[in-house]
Length: 163
Image (tube, rainbow, N blue to C red):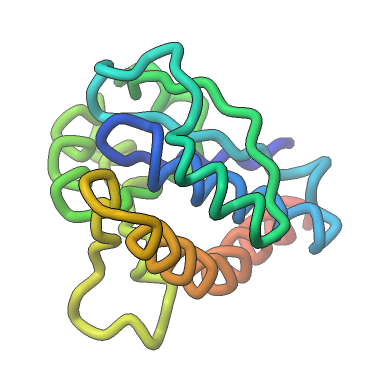
């Protein structure tokens, strides 16, 4: 049975595609590519059909990550097929939990940085859209740091299903 994870930010062109690319790489490196599916979406549909922001693509490529991305909006119907919905900041978490059809679905929503023990109290990944490349670099660092803990949690779930 496939375990499904979706990363969600505002427009699905910066943070969530970066998280999707990094986490997909971690999943592949861990040998779980055939058991874990990774995707991303945005809370809004402003960029539906667009590729990732060129700055996100450049930073990902510079660090060895690929991205073949088309933006889409997160729909409530996605909850039925997802195991985990990862919000990139608290401004996404709240509307996603309200969008969830059931309380069980709402419990699937978590903040990405909650998987980074060094994150401290601020669990938001800042939106780099209105800044320069340094904001995208900072976003990537936060995503990479949280991905290790997220991978451990997902691995535990996947291996628990195999028993």
